[in-house]
Image (cartoon, rainbow, N blue to C red; front, top):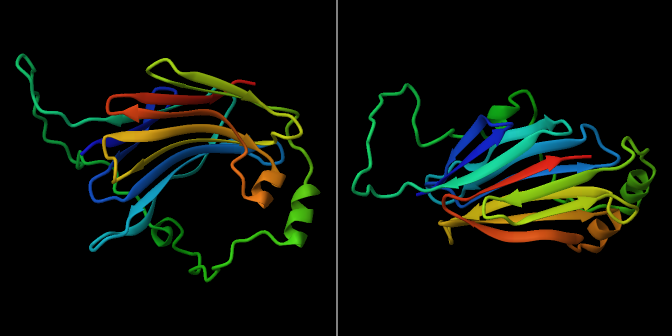
Length: 212
């Protein structure tokens, strides 16, 4: 079974073993009216018998302009002639970080009972009234196979989202998407503007950064 590794500026921050999970979503998001400028989340879960439910590996990790996030889908392949094997006894399980439940990550917070997450007209008015904290953004995404895309903010593109999503139905690949959108897109339940949509195979990686 493959695993995900997540790096910021070549420093490993998470290894996510995918065995036993249904879905994993590694995502960077930001907006002109939010601080920090960009945040990294890695979430997912295993929902079958014996699964731990919804899990978080990275929660709201702030990113600065110029930080490079790399997400790699790694393959645990069979050995080939000429491969050199090194065996090391480590203190931690090489299957990856186990992730944390909401209760484990926020032990002092009471369990949420909210079931309706729709945006009311009053909430939409409050969101439109929020002040701009950033004049603009320029974001960039690319894959190890050479695909690349960039996007810049304007009045119709005030928010951005970069995601790498894996699911158990196609375990040897992950979907990569870069999009920009605004509140009107959210209210209309549309996907905004897609700048990159592609697939990683095992061994491939995708990178993202806020470049301006």
